[in-house]
Image (tube, rainbow, N blue to C red; front, side, top):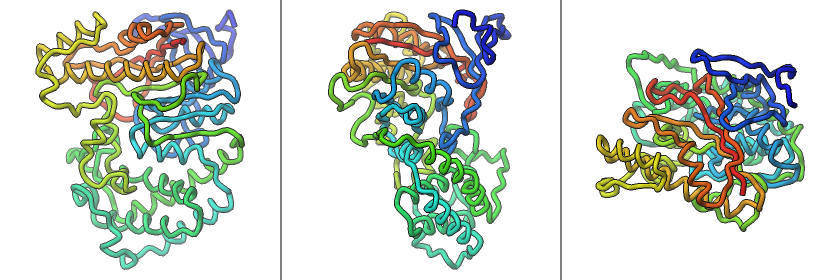
Length: 436
């Protein structure tokens, strides 16, 4: 594929800054050349393909990227690891490409969504359950709900209008009462979860779960019931189509006792690791999903302990940032020192992120087979006005652990799934290909 200009879905464009970029629309050719420092604009057509769109999730992969990287750097029946698996996009694509995979994430809510997305379901059970739930929607009356059915969680009555609370409690109760397997119930619980933010009083388009009075968000009685019915009509066919294409004999695991810094698999277990780790203080995942976690029973009160376990967390102790910490990468340490002069806390958050990523690099190196690759998709962000170039700092850290940087290239970001403040937006993801 020496002349990419002759490939139908590939064109060369020039952006507003006069920079040359290769635009790829739809599926990415497996043998697409990716030279060091080259930049691409990938236009996705697959974000709603099969089970990928079961539930919104911030900053997730567009499916064509892991699909391409999986096929480029692994073979059928090999094992793939995603140590920051999030909602499981890598695992879905690995499964469809007939690769075994493991997804690791500290967040039980993320593991739950990912597990549902890779679990095939019987069409007759899906249709029977959907009919029962549609009948339940039509037959809803407030008198069918008891106070005991309504979950209790922090600021519940601020987040939800009373009518919505009762509708949601009724739907949750009806899902639990279905006479089908737990895997089918879990699918409908994900459908239920996917409407929670929309029928709450929180801003639909913010990574922070907050109520913004200026939005004048209007949630009417009946909205939860109507949205749930529409969601089932949309998502059951997608799950049916996924189940019909499911490749039997391929395994997908989501261990609950590991995180990206503690991977308890034997050495040389994986041919490829592929991930998109969180950025420094970019998305507070527990806070983003707190309403969903409360409704599904993954949290009852404070989320602080879960937040502390996340790589890139802002939950740090004052004693930790009294002194300046260095990571040992001169370019990174210079930025951290500059941040420290203005904000010691954020300087420590940046240091801690890189230290956590160093642990992750070491763990992945251990479980990769010789010659295997670790592909990391990571962006930059700004901390107190300073550009923090995560990808540049990770490469020397990886080399110090024994990896070779095979190549690196940029993926321009053209759309943000959830709004973030302009000063925090990340315009380019960098894809690092590290080889053991």
